[in-house]
Length: 68
Image (cartoon, rainbow, N blue to C red; front, side, top):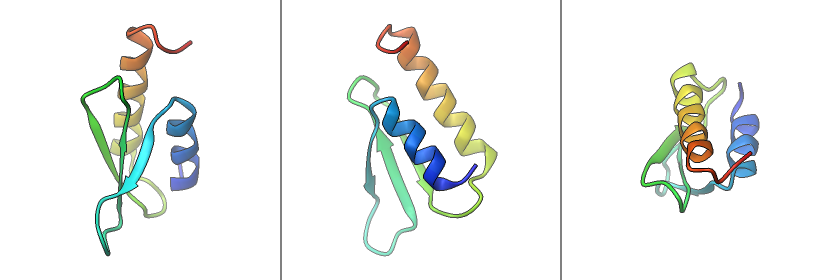
């Protein structure tokens, strides 16, 4: 999976994104309904561990009943 596709998926579920800091290659995703944050490096391809973490956060949202 590439960064653009993962970014699109997370935003579809209501996540917001900000770049960690000047010169950093990491972007931080967060959702107002979750205490978790997800830092993702913008490199191609995205490692499986980041995709798995994103899926876990999406599942948490679904369990809260906020998503279909």
